[in-house]
Amino acid sequence: MSWTLVVAWTVATLLITLTATAWRQTRALRRVLAAERTRARLMDAMYHRDVCALKARLAETRTPAAAVLAAAEHELDQALAIYGTIRDPKEGGSS
Image (cartoon, rainbow, N blue to C red; front, side, top):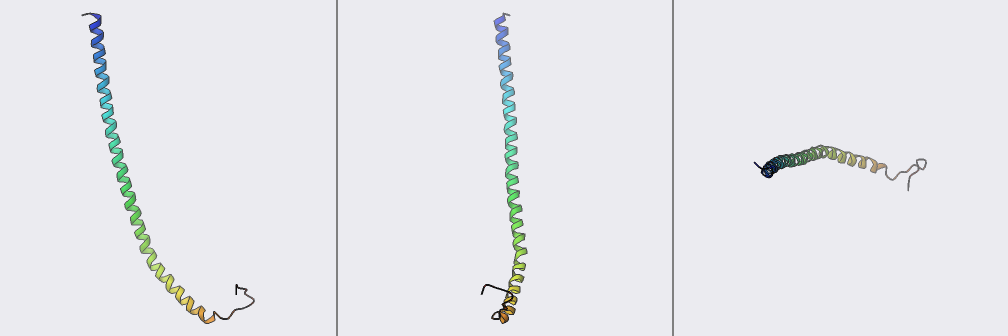
C-alpha cells in the first residue's frame, strides 16, 4: 500500500466518523429542543389553566362580599339620610 492510499483512507474514515458524530449530536439536540418546546407549551397551558381557575375562585369570593357590602351601604345610607340635614359646626365639613 502506498502512503497516498493510507492517507486517503484515513481522511475518508475520519470524515465519515466526524459526519456521523455531527449527525448524531444534531439529532440529539433536535430531540432535546423538541422536548423543551413541549415542556414550554405544557407549562404555558398549565399557567393559563391555573390563572383562569384563580380568577374564577376570586370572582366567586367577591360576589357574596359585594352583595353584603352593597346591603350594608344601603342600610348606612338610609340611617344617615335621617341625620343628613343636620350639621354640627364643631365637626367641620365641606358644606
